[in-house]
Structure formats: structure tokens, C-alpha cells
Amino acid sequence: MRFMILLKADKNTEAGHMPSEQLLADMGRFNDELIKAGVMQAGEGLHPSSRGARVHFSKDGGVRVEEGPFADTNGLVCGFWIWRVASREEAIEWVKRVPMPHESGEADIEIRQIFEMEDFGELMTPELRAQEERQRAQLGG
Image (cartoon, rainbow, N blue to C red; front, side, top):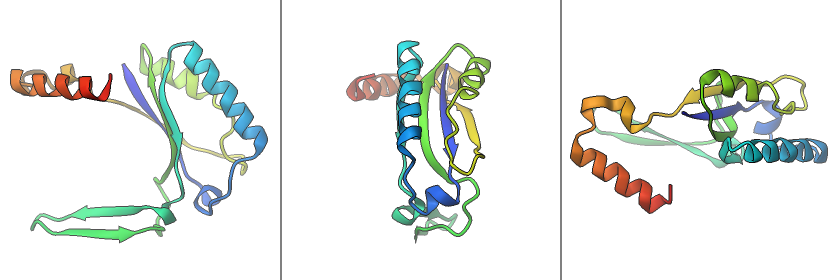
């Protein structure tokens, strides 16, 4: 099973404050543990929303671009991992070990399972399955 682990932004990450050297070292050690255990497949930090954009699609076919920063910071993400683990419970146990990611002393981390081809059942026709397999091969995984 694969999971995306989403580290939620806070006022400091949105202000562009960089993590401390200590936090970078702690996260580096934690990532080493994840890699050694065969769990971590990817992981990155994200710039604040002031450097981003949102693209809104409407029923009538319209497309509107909203430039950051975004007023509502609830739900914004400042970093992520992709992990391969045996269960949601294993992902939770790993997340409990994440070094405190925000200097404010509080943080929220969301765990979301990634869909696999098998999850779509009969909707994944042989043609769609072949397309998916071709795309994964082109991406190298």
C-alpha cells in the first residue's frame, strides 16, 4: 500500500521562514530511517502559497487562475512524503515518529492512501490498464 503523508502549513511556513539547522538534521536522520526500512519513495518540502497558484474549473467550462498567497491557509500543505507500507496503521506509527516539523510546537500531518489500479476494479479496462502500465514504465516505476 502506498500513502501520501501531507505536512500541513502554518503561519511560519506560509511566511517563508526556513526550518532550523537542527530540524533539517532531525528530518534528514528520519528520512534515512525511512529509506533504510524501504518505506520512503519520495519526499519534498514546498514553497509558501505566495509562490503558487490555484486553477479553478467551473461547470460551464470556465477556467480561472488565482495567484497566491491564499487567504484561507487551512488545508495548505508545506511538504509531503510518499511511503510504501503494509497498512494504514504502519503509516500512522511512522508519522508518530516524525520530528516536530514546526517551531511553533504544533503540527498537523494528514495520511492519505494512494489509489492503485486494483482499486478501480472493472472500471480499469484492459486498454486503461495497458495505458497505466505504459505510463508507469515511462516514469520509471
